[in-house]
Image (cartoon, rainbow, N blue to C red; front, side, top):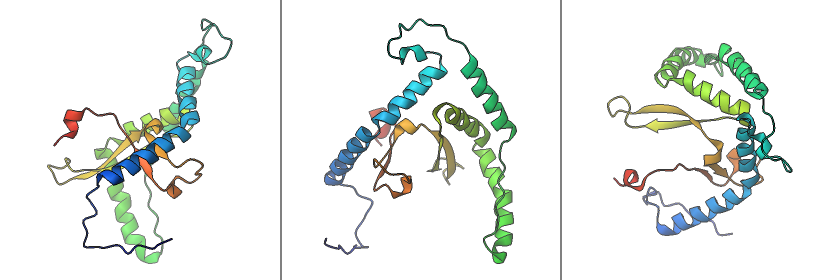
Amino acid sequence: KEIKKIDKTKNIDNIGSDEMEKALEDLKKYKEGKIVLESRIVENEHWFRMRHWDTLSGSKGNENASAWLFNSIANKHADAMDNYPSPNILPREKGDKAEAEMLTSILPVILDQNEFEETYSDVMNYKLKMGTGVYGVFWDKSKLNGLGDISVQKIDIINLFWESGIMDIQRSRNFFHVELADNDLLIQ
């Protein structure tokens, strides 16, 4: 393999058509590798909405349905909300104690500004139905009158794509988060 030296004077923010085509190829390959997971997520939602008879082979689709699953998930969700976590930052070493205490007092304010309790509730609901939940932490330049601040959001796992066969998502060569958007909103 040839090792390329990175030219730090080059503007790395510009992405050309070649890079876009390669990224689109990777995205399509990752999407193919995630078909089974996506179908399971859709099936889990059918079960939750008591439409599970549609997913079973040999079913006519008109069998009885009860709300036992909804009630079970609602109870688990209530337990999770009763045990809503609060940040407690611990120091890595003795010299970090003051910074850890400062962060412990700052983080609740940031989470409150982001209405994190609602996001936590949404992610917990998703986690109880699908088996996992994902938070997205983004920089929102429109917050604080243009100064910007972080934004914490629930992410639907169907909108995430990574390399197939990877157990640790951090090891994926690429990672994609896609969303449906109107073209006129993307043009600036």
